[in-house]
Length: 91
Image (tube, rainbow, N blue to C red; front, side, top):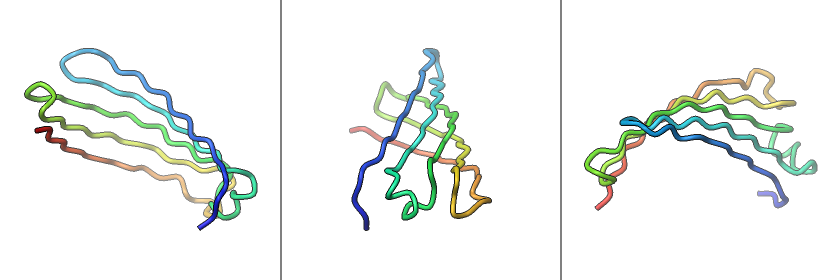
């Protein structure tokens, strides 16, 4: 485990309608001395998702798809897709 500093930035927008349509982009910048340990210079994730609230806010169904890239990565073929699904129940 290493210690140091980094910066994560996220921006998103939520359209208001029956289905919620969040769009987000995230970037990570590890401290320069930590870059060799992290295996990349910076990391970028671009995400499109859909969220549906059912029964008020008691049940939430959420899915998103992301494209992940890293610059100056230890693995030059790192670029990949990621798909997530989430079900949240509030009592």
